[in-house]
Length: 308
View 1 (cartoon, rainbow, N blue to C red):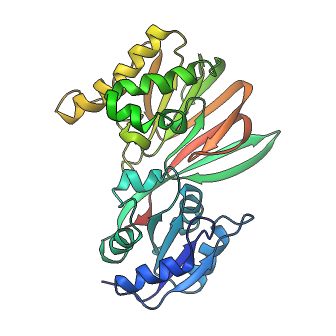
View 2 (cartoon, rainbow, N blue to C red):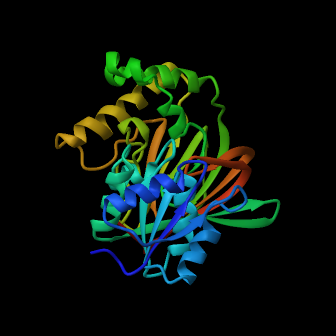
């Protein structure tokens, strides 16, 4: 059932309002309130304006940055979120099964689907003693991330299948340097290790159908951590097998129930994870690089976001 009031938060650099209006009319919606993002405000301000306007459903039309910004504001309210994915990654949409590549199909889902409650992650970043807090719906961290894996040639994937990801891995290996990491999980003892990649996620699937965090679910009340320290080709090959086969295809066909780790790739589940780095590393939130950090804390806020 169409809600009493719909708000559209859209990124004009990703999709034009006219296109959205035509697709809305095609699915039977002729009345909506419009809120445009800007380079200085990726969505928090427009989402607050939609709430103040009494919207009961806010449709975020844009990329992962727009979705994340709107989700930060809607968390803890009764207003529901829907997505018209128009970015490069569209990571939350992928993990929730929102239609990709068709504005009309996504809007049909937005109007007709029932909402489910999912978790929202929060990350506190220490920048020289000043703490910044950001929400995230998919994953945060540093190192070999979703974008590196997704750079695999589409043509090569068609011809070589999962082996094509070796090519993407090969490009990333040369750019990885180990850094000292101190981790505190759920308030336990500090654990010291070395890694070039630490990802903490609420969802586990990225572009190309690859699942980096196979135990992650957007509504399970936990965060999933992946730490990778592979340096040589043999270690990378073992990790690639674990990602694509042990934690991918094998699970699809009824294999292992829990995520398979290797000597250089570890999986952990927790509700709060504190990470301190020996050296600064470029940090990403839902695929967006926000600068270098040396300390961050990720935590989960269970069931606070209502998403169609």
